[in-house]
Length: 487
Image 1 (cartoon, rainbow, N blue to C red):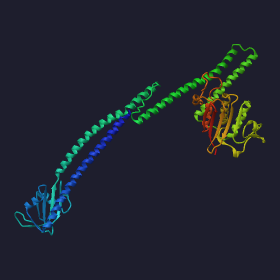
Image 2 (image 1 turned 60 degrees about the horizontal axis):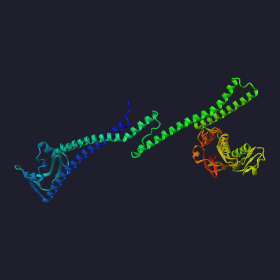
Image 3 (image 1 turned 180 degrees about the vertical axis):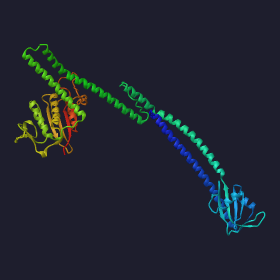
């Protein structure tokens, strides 16, 4: 069975609700009218009996005859006199109806057979007598007044027919209005669906109409879907760029290695020295390819959110070791560590940095456990984060720029900053620093694969931390890594 459209569902739902509401309203109207008529008739009959009873008590005795009765009650009512000995006299009633009415003894209006209400007035002790045209005078013990309300059913039927007719017209008008309103209200959705189909068919330039002057909910939906399309297009562009960059990075060493191998196969490397040099170059290119593949695998692991090793790591000690290693690789650069005191073999605090002292024990590096700035994570990956940041600072700052690695403990999170006094990073480059294969140099310099900062960010995210950068041409660049503290 083909599912109904949202327009059909809304129209049917509104139509059903309309029918129910109008039908219930009509039923309520008919019920109210019927009850009002019934209450009105009973009230009129009760008022009549009350007036007659009051008049009889005030008269202290009344002698009735047929003409007096007819003048008293009028043509709308009937009367039955019940004598003390049980005999009855009726005006305006058949014999069978008179029997039913005479049986009423209630001072309140009650049904007395058919569409008739009756109420009794007790006249015992009031000296009420009735003198017929012929016969003995009767002492009246009870007067029963009755009224025929068969016309009330006709009135109710007329009201019901009128209400039903009006309800039917109202339902038809409301359903037609619902069809028009739902159609107009869903027109933006149909336009949006058509645009979405065009996007799905390959036209990536199409976007949904925003409709800011219409329904806010539809406008919000259009903006959200457009944002999703933009994100999808951006992801596709990034993926194409990533594939192109990865292919470029892999093609260069592969082409170089293939060239040397092809030269050897063609007999161009008969000289053993040249052969050794060629194999060395092939090995270099293969190592470059392996490192690039390892970097890509690490990024893929980060994208998949795979867990890392979980063990306590001393950030201060890790930062101190990173700076010590960098001093070995770049002995002419001004590298400093700032944080809690640590002990590193073969280093003195005067030439190396604040907080470093010569180790006296057998351990190559240690510190007081009570002063440790600890986090939970993979020590090798966290060391890679610091090495990438320090190496990036060494590579992109002039020889005279100072580089400082500082560890700042916190109650819930610890912070590591890598700052330099270099020329800074242009503002337009800052949003792209953590993109994969991105380089500030349009000529694509061979200074690296362009994955270092992307890997750094991925590793920090795997440790549930954050990394941020700020740069100023006058003061230099600061990378800030924040990691949850180990409690």
